[in-house]
Length: 83
Image (cartoon, rainbow, N blue to C red; front, top):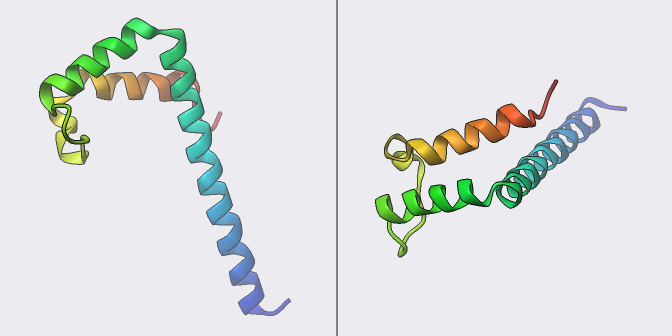
């Protein structure tokens, strides 16, 4: 194959791999919240008290959402994407 086709194939693989890891991460997080509803309620309460119900959190809010960030990190530790 020519260089252009190799680049196209590589870009396609990178895109697909990125989408798959995102989906797997979301699935793991949803499973964790289903298994630990008290944790979900506590994180949701933190989000509502800090950010409110009228908007979504953004990256600037992470420093003021320590419990929610800890839940995310624990989900990644509990079921990492790579061994």
